[in-house]
Image: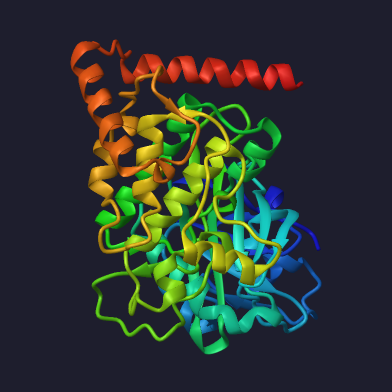
Length: 415
């Protein structure tokens, strides 16, 4: 088909109200409203003299436009045109973008990398393929929740369209070019405490913002945390398909035991938790932190059943020496009693999180394996040394600069 933009659009058009017409496999056409004042004019614009083709015109909500509707066109509006009498696919956004690659087709949605035809801006779209229609609730929930979340450590949602009658949804989202946090640890090995703290604090900031806005993620894991690209060390939390907006009064009849096996909390396994709770995300934080430091999960097994038993028993060991403050924090995060598990505001005040760590105090065995009397003695020794020693901690900004330098050096050595 011929794009008549070059013959029909000139500098004088800028003084008139504008429209953008999208036709699949063609560049967008920028025209004036007067140039699109009738269906015949639109047909000539997009099809030239080939008016025998069955042209149909739709608005941005995928509703068909008829002759009488054209008088209501607004400035900077969008029209989407199909040929051969076809209906407009709900993935209409592809009209102004070029599909670049299929990122994945998972159980809940299909994710595609796209690029804008004019600006070359990279984005992703998340949509439901024909065999994923039953997952409409999850992708619709993600759209509604992400629309409310605007944070530097949470993936951006630009726009979305929901079509409940057809169980279709399209989410236009930020494209994160970097690898997952899981891949990063696998490639670089267990992280030292400074690097782990730098990354953990970003996760903590994003989660704290979520919880302040009554959002419980429910699937917080290494695979759902991505670097924005491979040069910066900013990370963002993704995949809110299982997330829950607390305090809305909306009925929630899904099973509670969803998510990834290694991250399921003991209160879910035991059935003690009767409704979704913020404590689930806190437990996941503990699993995340453990993996960042040790490069393995605290609870393991040859199959799901063995992993569940390990989680229920609550037994784990620290594979290498770490600071006393870190041991204490992990134990509080992985407290099997969800009612007394550390709260998020207390995590933010934690000494390890704030970098108030005495490097010379390290434990090589689980603190839980120490006898009670030894625990008390150890605590007394730590308390005395805290009073005697003046911890000369650098400012947060200086520490972050050092951490970035370490990471860069480590990556260069790998290369």
